[in-house]
Image (tube, rainbow, N blue to C red; front, side, top):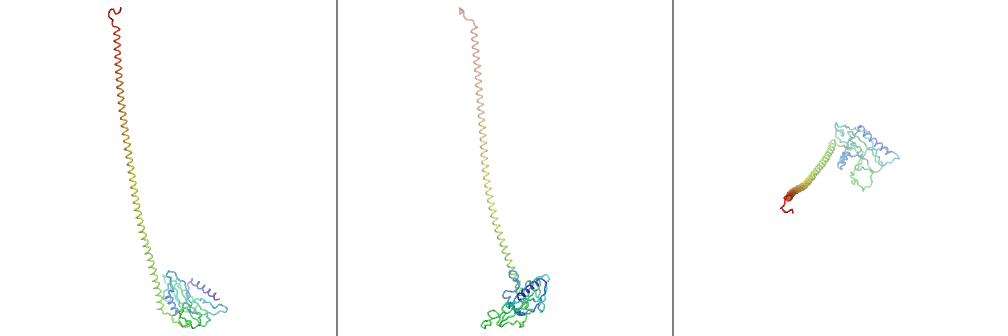
Length: 335
């Protein structure tokens, strides 16, 4: 039965966090404030963690109203949830801050989003998106001679009656706490001081995160500048290597072009010399042919002259012979 009541209470808590619910409040007493301050000193205060993530809602077990026992049920259950709006106490006032829907106003004090506080020892409230949601924990009846409330707990637990054991080891006061004893609530100045301290720590945490982000951005900027400088050095070295390679290639091309021009010049000179020699050879051959032609003409002329002279001599000889035959001989030559 207690498990069923616990499940029903948790279900109602989930349902009431969605709509706009106005939950009641009980006056904050000194025990709740001292536990709140103790959690703050231990580094377990409400708000956000150093990483910026919201902490889950923790329900503290402190002395509170007692539920009637149910025969035949297990009495070892730690407690049952009961919503604070069912308690006939003074209702707390809260409202949404204009322009800041993620904050709440509780009794004139500003609460940050997801802030958790305890108006009473067994009541825990949460500021969620401008709405305040509270729940109350009911403690079961303890069947033991001696009970005590451990540190950080709401409900009492059974203690060993051995007188040799001391409560000082647990960190609690040796004087047993009486849940029915009236306690003095914290004053408005004390609550304001605690909230101011939380806000100051929150501001310091934001400043620390801001400085860390600035340092990270500075390191990133320096790393980018170093990378840019390294890139420029590499680019400059690459340009120098490319310029040296270009000059070397240009020098090799000029040398190769000069060699080609020299080879062309030598070939041109050889061609000119060959043509000149060929022309000289042709001129010599022409002169030799002209000389031979003249010699041949002179020989032919001499031969013609000689032939004419021989013909002339032969003709003269024939004429002389004819003259001899035609002339008369001496007397008595015919006898």
